[in-house]
Length: 87
Image 1 (cartoon, rainbow, N blue to C red):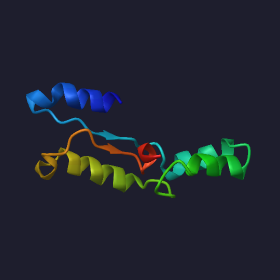
Image 2: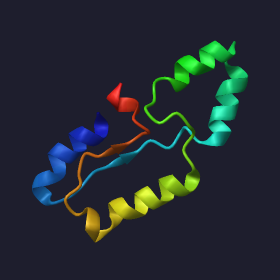
Image 3: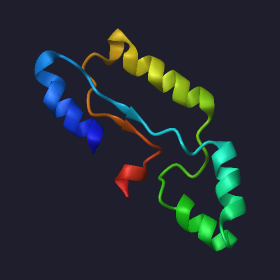
Image 4: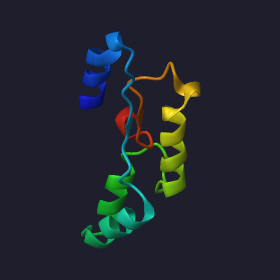
């Protein structure tokens, strides 16, 4: 919500605000899997995402580069989170 609020507040100044929620990479998924009390608990967490696999670091990096580029000049209030906000 913070990124959307900032996008609204700063749009008049032609400032774009986007968010990349990079927290679901393989290392974090392994940590969560180890901390989950069961495989079922881990599936409950994973089922919150449309994309059913961890994010690759290169995907986060290429997304950030795209959002900073001129090609993304009309993108604002974009949340990149593997489909988490969709649910």
